[in-house]
Image 1 (tube, one colour):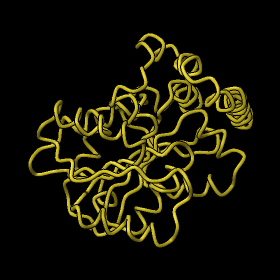
Image 2 (tube, rainbow, N blue to C red; image 1 turned 180 degrees about the vertical axis):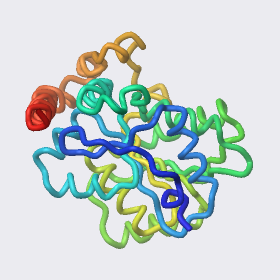
Image 3 (cartoon, rainbow, N blue to C red; image 1 turned 90 degrees about the vertical axis):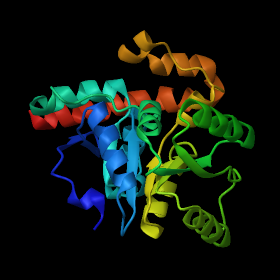
Length: 261
C-alpha cells in the first residue's frame, strides 16, 4: 500500500489556482521521511510552489492540471503563506513556509542506514558533483545512490526509459528533481507515474546546498523579500519570473479573496 495514501487526512487549501498541503515544516519533513522509508507500490509526487508557480498555474491549464495531480503541494514562498493565512484563517496557526532547501536538508539529516535512498537529478555536472560531496560530508548517513545531470534539451522517449532504468537499478526511494520551473514539476509527476519512488520537484535547493548560489539572508526570507535578493543575483534569468509572476500572483489571490467575500 502506498504510504501517501495511508496517511491521515491532511488539510488542503486553495491559494490562487493551486491546492496546497497545509503542514508545519517539521511535520512535512517527517512525512517525506516516512514515505521514503516505507515500501511503495506506486510513486508519490511532491511539489514546492511559490508565487511564480501560482502565476503559471493561473495562466496554463496543462501545468495547473499536472500540479493538481501531485500528492502534495507545499508552500515554498513566504508571500504564499501570508495569502493562505488570510484566505483560510482556520489553518493560520499551522500554515508555515515549507521551503524546498530546508526540506531537503531536513530529510538528509533524518536519513539513516534504513533509508531513504536518494537520487539527485538535475543541475550542471559541476554543481551536481559539489552537491553530492557536500551532502555526503554533512550527512554521512544519508545514502546517495545515484545522480545525473541531464541535457538541457528535452529528453527523447528512449532517454527517459533509460533514465527510469538507472533510477530503478540504483534502489532509490527519493528522487530529488532540480530542473527549474516548470520542467521539474512535469518530470516529478512523470517519475511518480512510472516508478514506485517519491519524486520531489525541489527548485533551487541544489544550487543553495551545493554553495554555487548564495541564499538570501534569513530576515529577507521572513520579510517576503527573497525574490529581490535573487533577482539582484540573476537578473537576466529571473526578471520575467518576478516582474510578470508577482503581479499575476497578486491578481490571482485578490480575485479569490473578493470571490470568497
